[in-house]
Length: 172
Image (cartoon, rainbow, N blue to C red; front, side, top):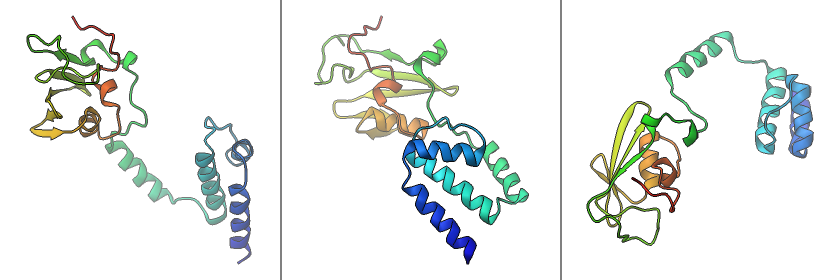
C-alpha cells in the first residue's frame, strides 16, 4: 500500500508542475534532455516512467511484440514538408479550357472541372473539382482536407496537400 500511495503523491506533484519543472523532472527520470516543451506530453512521459520504475516495465515478450507491430505499420508523425518532396511527387493541376475564370469565393480553389493530380508514397491520386465539392475514388467530399485525409489517413490541410495554398501562384 505504501508504494501505491507514494506513486499517487508523486503523480499529484507532477500534475502541479510547470512545463519547465517537468522538463527538469524528465531529465532526472530519463537521464537526457527532453526535446519537447509541451507540458501535457512531458507530464504523460514522466508519469509513465514513474509508474514503470515502481511497478516494473514491459516484459521482453511485450516489447518484442510491440517492435513486430511497429515494423508492419507505416506511421508518420508529421507529414513531409512540401520543399522536401521530389519533383515527381509534387501535385499537378490540369485545368479545362477557359479556366481563368473563378467561380468560387476562395482564390486558391480551381474552377469546377479541374483535375488535381498528386503523387503520394509512390501512388498517383486524382481528384476532380466540382461546384460544391470534390470527387475522389468515386466519392464526393465536401473539402480538399477531407480528400487529403482519405488519401493519407491523417489530417492535412487540403490546399497545402494539393499545392493550392498560394493564390498568387500561376500554373504554367
